[in-house]
Amino acid sequence: MRRLIKKKYRLLVFSIEVSILLVALFLAYNSVSFPAKKTTFYLKDSNVSTLLDTLNKNGYMTYSIDKLTLALVPKVKKGWYQLEEKKQGRFQFLNTLHTHHVSSINIKVYAGETTQELIKRLANDMKLDPHTLLSYYNQRSLYKEANIFSGSYSLPRNADENTTITILFDVSNQMFEAFQTDFCHTQISKEDMKIFLTMASIIQKESNNVQEMPLIGSVIYNRLLKGMKLQMDGTLNYGKYSHTVVTSERIKHDISTYNTYKYKGIPPHPLSTVSIEALRAAYHPAQTEYLFFMLNRDGSHNFAKTYKEHLENVRAFKKKKTTDSNTSKSLKPSA
Image (cartoon, rainbow, N blue to C red):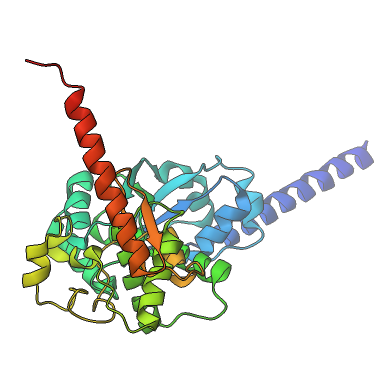
């Protein structure tokens, strides 16, 4: 009987010691707290490894043991998270992380729009102050235009001005890094990037047709190599003239260096927001002998190697336009 009591006593003592050790380990683990900082981050999936990697990138150092903790707490899901500037124990932080998930809104950045147009629309859609937005934009921008690529961006619905601009620039930088990895053999300098973005913005202004962009890019390169003026209407779609139809009067009286009918070379700055496709066409234009192109009524372009061939295209276009107009008139019912 005494042996049985002694054995039970030892088992009890062992259980208490183990419990004390576990409590001590938990307290030690929990004492290694995460920093108190206000952070917004996007989680691309609900994988534990993705979460730990994302936390690390945002200044929250994690350890292998955190994987065990995450297996015991509510699972986080894909989306945006906003953390408050609040110091928490390690377990409490991971246990309540799922409660910081916030709803998102998709914002469209359009190719061809200016910074002012983008800021105005962002302020309206996100219910933010346009002046504060522009201030944060200017702090991050490298060029007058084309700092953010066109595309769809997911943003936290209640993001402030700083967070909104930071996300747009960070995602655009990721797009550019992917572009460099996929298409470039060397690192592109800031100066060269400005040239490529300016060319891309001309291409963007001339056509939204992805298949035609490399062809337009080839015309730009071919004319520059021959010392010819670009003579492209799109270069005059800058600033307040961004969406203005270019007339012969405008070409005659615009004395800015954006007027490629008067000055050789490319404009001094990018004209607008560009797409990755337009940038790709500027960096890798098609290999052609084209020097001219003209717009058709269906939105496509006719390309020509010589001025004579270009004039033939112009005459064919005018003839078809006249024929179509006469046909339309003949089909009208008589009075």
